[in-house]
Length: 404
Image (tube, rainbow, N blue to C red):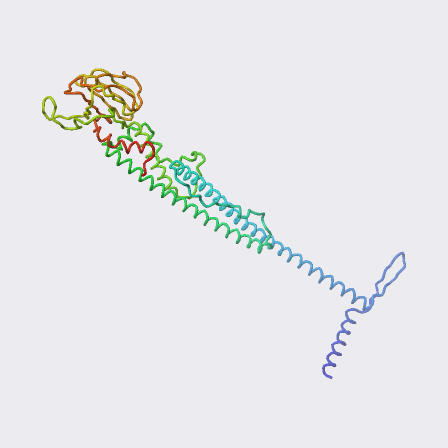
């Protein structure tokens, strides 16, 4: 009962207030002397007020919604712009990595070409290098909307995994190449050691011979010969082992070229040594004296052949030497022949290795038929017997047949 009483009391108060604030009203209109009126009932007033209130509420809601949505769109656009900036940064990093991979791959191809060139020149079998394919890298795409983040994240993960695998593959190729170069470098060390030992046996200074060699020393150790300087690709690859190998090969090649001037043939094919190089008792005075040549005895008229190619710088009588010939072989090497019975060349003639230049005799200060044979290097006489003993090894080196 109490609850119904409160409801009835509320309804009564509401009706009283409505009747008080919204009584029936009359609106008067005067036109051309006539007066008219319109009665606006309480219900009509309530409807108009209700409509105005609803319209105001609608306007307020729309205004708020417009302002709020604008803030949402602004925030949304900001997120999209930030996502595109981040994506652009990722794409730039990816492009840089892709270029680095391509440059590294190209540099490895250049290195492999050099290895192949070296092994072909040395007559060795080339072990094929692992192939490299960068086609699996996903290409850079367009900027994506923030709603595509999930797909883009998966795409980036796949691309990251691919790039990581490519770097691993490149490292494997680099390591395989370094192993090949290490083997080639060790082989070249053995060849250089063989060369050095041969020159030492011949009594020739390797450093002095290189100094006098007709090859540009500036060419040693300046880079790989398989590409032009303008085509060298700068990368983070460690090329120290390649530079070292090239320097060793350059030194080896220079030594080979220098050895081409070394006279290694024996002037008379058949002979016996009647007097060695160095200190001996003079055959006439019996006093100790320095003998700068090797006396090689045989029958009178025995052919004397040039031990190497060169140019005749002297041919004629020369005091105690009698009939005498001097040949300049280049690179600091000269040979001299004394006590000849006949000359077969004249000054200025170019001679080949093994060519007849004269005949054995006993002219000049001589006790009997023999050839006085001297080899000079860099203005100093060296022991011809040492050179002749090393001739076999030198010939192997010249023909690239030695097993170093």
